[in-house]
Structures are given as structure tokens and as C-alpha cells.
Length: 310
Image 1 (cartoon, rainbow, N blue to C red):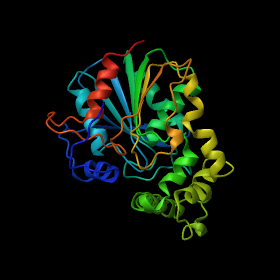
Image 2: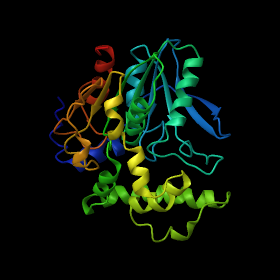
Image 3: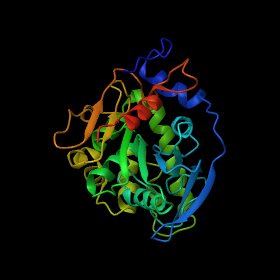
């Protein structure tokens, strides 16, 4: 189980340190743009070594393929003989998407299109790795549909399995820096998109002070939900876990500042799900030193996938 370095003395330092200071040396991605079935696009970043095994990496809220946690995961799998596909959600690759919807915690249609695209390239084994929002997306995808048999296993980290209580958790005073950072980025995207498309009411932007409010005013109506509660209820991965039949690991640190108590369920009977709740790790942290630049989460993901029980 994970043991944090002594100088990372609390959950916030564990979360912030790797986000600000970690550098990952990785070969340059090869970018591919694919068109989606609804006339939008997704930007995919590839590392390829002619392998038949592909790891698809899904980032967190307002992240992208160049975040250190994505590149760190890409690095360990690439050097162990896997091809890598780190995809960017709509509006997260540096260019606004073409259609009114953005992305959200349950938008699994885009993940499906990415996986299908990988299968069409001839991969015989596909593995999924998801972080935070991307972890929720991954788990919901696995639980809501009959997946292709070539999708072999999945690993997720720092997953807000219950979205409503987690939205309240991140709105606590101790998390104000994180929440305001996310809100600034999300609100800027909404404002920019409203300049080019009809159908976005920005009149509530100024009074949007919480992520819950952003989801209620923007995420929900833009994606066909009644309100934030409806969005959270339909998209929380917690409701899909018991149906997962793909070998899957969830790792949530008990001291994660973003996660509510509901994000730590016991083992789900009837599924092929394994859960691990280390005492430390923060949110998408799990920093390690003296391991040739490899973080604990990356080694854990590789070990699970190589030694999984099918």
C-alpha cells in the first residue's frame, strides 16, 4: 500500500506538489483528430511502438493529455511495450469544440468512439486508465454497456464515485483554491463559446460561485439534464459498479480532499471490481521518489494490468 514521502505532510501538499512541480520526460505525442458521430471532433495524442496492446488514458476535470499525471502513466506503459492513446475531451485540447455540448462526468459516448477507433486500428487488447472525472467516466462506461471482449481491464484513481456529495465536498472552505481554479477555466470556456454559438445563457455567470451552481446553470441544461441533481444521479459511477464485468481496480486515497464518504464503497459483489483505499495520496497524487521517476500509482496500474485475474 502507498506510503507518502515525509515532506508531503498533508492532503493538500500531496495534491498540489505533483501538479506544480512534476516534470515527465516523454517522447512527443503524435496528434490525430477524429470526427465524432455528431459532427464534432476529438483530439487524440498517441505514442506508438507497433504494439497490439493499447492503453487509453482519460484525464480529469479541465485537464488534458499533457498533464503530468497523464504523461507519467503514459511513460510507464509505453516503456513496457504498450501503445498509448491519451485523449482530450471536447474543448480540452486547446480549441473549442464545434457543437453546443462540452464534456461531462458521464459523457461515455465520446469514450466509446475513442475505443472503437482504437479497435479499428487492429489492437487486440485495450486497457483503460482514468483519473478523477475520467475515472468516473471509465467506470460508468464499463457498467452501463456490454463492452467489447478486447477491452481487457481498467484502473482508476481518485474517483468521485458519487457526484453530488463530492460537489459539496469540493465546495468546503478548505478546498476553495481548487474550486475557484476549476470554475475560472469552465466559466471562461462558456463565455468564449457563447460568442460563437447560440443557446448559451451567460446571464448567470457572475453569480456562479460554486461548481454545483455551474453544473446546475450550465452542465445540466447543455447536456439534456433537468438540473444538477439529475445530472449527478444519472452520471455517478457508484450506480454502475455492480454491473462491471471487466477486471477493474479503483484506488481512492482516504485523505483525498475532493472525495466524500460515499466514494469509498465496500467490495461490490457480483462484479469484477477491486477497491483499494490507501490512507494517503491526496487527489491524483501518490508521489514517489527514488523509483526512476515512476509514481506509486503508475506502478500499481501496471502491476494490476499485468497480473490481473480474469
